[in-house]
Image 1 (cartoon, rainbow, N blue to C red):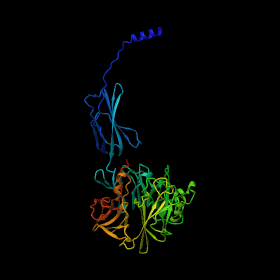
Image 2 (cartoon, rainbow, N blue to C red):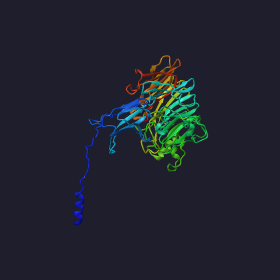
Image 3 (cartoon, rainbow, N blue to C red):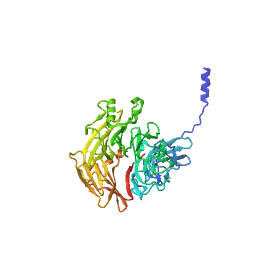
Image 4 (cartoon, rainbow, N blue to C red):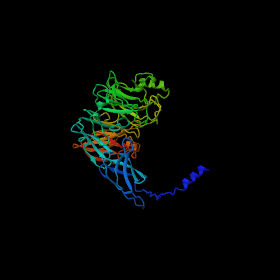
Length: 510
């Protein structure tokens, strides 16, 4: 009773002096998704409803966070209305608008998506030979304009003898996913504006003393390969930033082509294909075969031997298809190209191998998969297609350019100003005229294999570079709706280039 009386007394004398006020809560609207170019002005006027939110009682903050999680938040404004000159790097961001009540520290926040682009964020990378100098022009999909000679102000030393412009973003430093290959050597290029650093030189990716000058780089599974000066080198990227080691071919030289599965999303023990130009035979290379848990086998073997190894590991699933009998030997390699055309729905795109024996011309379609078959691939090796092209007009012309579709079993070749198509599903096969670019010389013929899923159907578009009176012209022929028949297709056309050597589409990497 005494304790209760003390408590009662303490309560009875607490008269209280509390000052309650209604909390003003803003109804924020007008913060919508934004898409802007670098160095333009980003203006946003938020709607806070009917209440007044004076600067004395409230403060405001605008900040952005890069969606890749690699950068700290950046405050871009502290006024109620945002008026900001965009100096952010191109990328995908989240924009946050926050209102703080000064007295209490309470805050309200709303966000929206912010996409920052530059004229170089997306478009055609057009590699030209400007009197022998490597020159890179960009046909911007952002502004619709052509940006010439983007490497001139990058600080990169002049490189001569342009060969290829490639994108290997999935297996490259994300900050520099593009490769420029030239007679002088190779280098990576920065992803935002093709900026350059000395450490982008290809020599920093090599663990041997030999100076490698790549003619091609191909990735599959957890590795990538390059060929230069008759030697093939492999680089492991399984959880590490690997380096290219010693040549995998011993005692013979290989052609500047690499067969690989460019269709499957996941491959664990990839099988690559090389061509031994000294002994005139196809060779298979599966680097994971050397691992102890796979038997410690020689990773380089003839196609027949590799097929036997595959059958031993997966009876009935090692080799699939019977389009041809024995593996070709004794022929001269003319051309090789990887595609996403998959006649057996095995997640194994056809690699076309064009061979000649005197005036005879043979085309083999080889499928390369996964020795372990853990993920996408159903088989290890496939004999997917064969055609005798000996009766096709000028198919072995010394100046012929070749391209193979991923849409259907189609082959295209160009000589001078004319392009032909061969439907490889017909018997006997024959060439059919597609179009002639009167008075021009075709210098580039290819299908660009897009990486982003939203662009995949454009992989069926035929890309043609030509030159007339010293000026290069780029044409892109739509392929999906035309079913690969380009006779009546009006192309998208871009001009103002030097002689076009290679063309690759730069997709957004954010």
